[in-house]
Image (cartoon, rainbow, N blue to C red; front, side, top):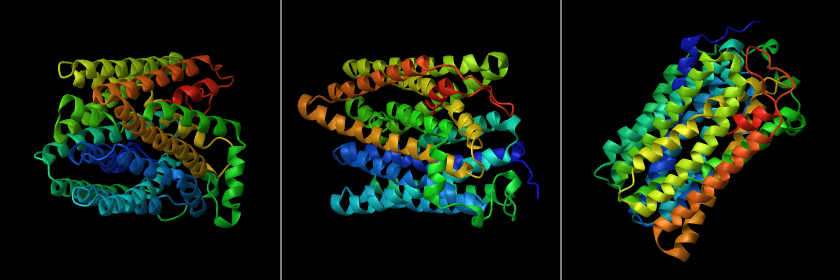
Length: 451
């Protein structure tokens, strides 16, 4: 039985689901951690540990991907994951609010919330990307990756901006109400967008799925995928590059509050501005790739290296900004950081979609889950190490601008190392098929730099 491919409307509908997912996550990883550090004067290590927990839970992504491979359907995993994510987001906001009264009880509730967030993101996000990889025509995969990722980044910007307006004047009750409203909208958007999109019948073996009886045990399947050279190397590159990227996620808003005196609403809008910059960077790369198709491989390489170098420069600008606060143009610098980060994000998603079907058949979900787990581990470790570094440097140096500056400078060095790594790997020896640009070892380093 043949399976209909997704048209542009179907791709947009899946993009709405990804946007709904991002709208919940952005509140938990940016606003709530700032409230813990600034409003409740708790150590930055606490939100760092909670966010690291939700990333660590996403080590279950390969298992979720394998489960959707066995069942042959992605819709139940997408809907179920979104419900768990929304519930976890609300629980995390309640726990954050309780920290203002009782840190122990609040931390316990937040712990449960962030566990659910990790499970929800893992189940929903992995299955959604596999759905795209399996049901989008090869000639449309790069465009589909751009559309879906841009929609998610746009949801970061929109959610952060609107939530920022509703959060001021800040109160713990407002935080819970805003998070509950965003979570409810995310669930409704998911249910409407995914309805009837996949169909009732499981995908056939001809499209890369099989019955459960044809599946080996999970550990055997995972070992088979790990033995695939491209899948293994891509996993390693994703981990290394994301470790370099992720350390600033949890410290930028507290930095803006402590050093520049921004309110919760203002720093949330700052996060929205950063995501708007990411959006612009992604669109710019996609447009240049469309206009200069013959030079697409070289452009990807240039954007990757240039994006890393530009990210390092923007981070050093933030370092100098802390010394010159409040007279430094922090908003412009953060926007520039977003543009640099966004310059290589689209290529990463396109690469994942292209490589998901390469190698042993019927392992698309498992491969996507493996790469997602590598990214999640790197993000959790990077975010946690960033907050620990801030706490340690503040203990020794006292002044927040010095403590945060040291950490931002270290991140800039990591970005430069990533740029050197991307420039030093050999170009690919073979062309990719299915109408996509070539993806070899050098491209795997470059493309993994995206979020």
